[in-house]
Image 1 (cartoon, rainbow, N blue to C red):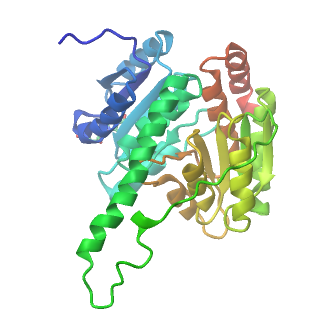
Image 2 (image 1 turned 30 degrees about the vertical axis):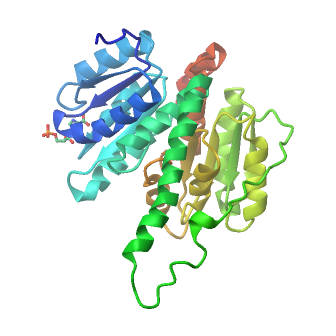
Length: 341
Ligand code: C2R
């Protein structure tokens, strides 16, 4: 059967043909979401001219999200970001150092060229994140994404049945609270009347200075936003109520968190909108970055560099600018002002 000719919306670049196993995970999900893509191999180290050529051409010809997949000193996603104002997703590939070299090279981009990083080898999460970004602008992708998310949910319920057969200890009480017999109640949440496009959630008072940086850049981009000091550990019910309340008006969530990043992890369980995470350093150092980025399949968190509230705002701007010329112009201006921030 002849393939239908479609303009690709996503360009996937691999640092090497040896990254193909990770890229296959991306491709499988994009096929499920029915989003046309183009996949190429180009290395920022070995063929910088090819990377530039592909990105500049793609940018001009309908590519709305770029995905860079690379291992070792993974500079490819950052170099893609230097050539475009479109959102760039980075997938660090495990090679040496358990993939941490690639993870930090992918995440720690300076202002104003963010890379939305997903976890090590998480090719499928890159595709899901790309789907979430595009579904801000295309409702038909939103529905397919909801179905996909549901398949990950169903897997958990099903595993409960299967695991019970494998646990045969004398003291194992497999009939206690049988999940298949529970009637899980999905609570209804009251919508909050708001026009907030980017809700920003901060879990610790000490992280507010980072939110301030996000706030300044979003103001420059004229994107409506709201900063809340609210987290799922200290105020779990209020947290869910707020997120559910603003979900309809929100296009992108930003979570800023130190220590264990329960904040962004919880957000990913509640909403299917893109979530940008800013890991912050306090007493636990960079552990917050690892706990934010290495999300399991199905629930990506677009992680930017440590303490980089400004890049979170630029990334949110890039996501919204896909279909908004005014934000595109403001983004270019914000990027030119970079030196004095
Ligand atoms: P080879 O298998 O080709 O030697 O590549 C690739 O992504 C791959 O994971 C080994 C690893 O090097 C990575 N690579 C980069 C870049 N180019 C290649 N990180 C780049 O430009 O960032």
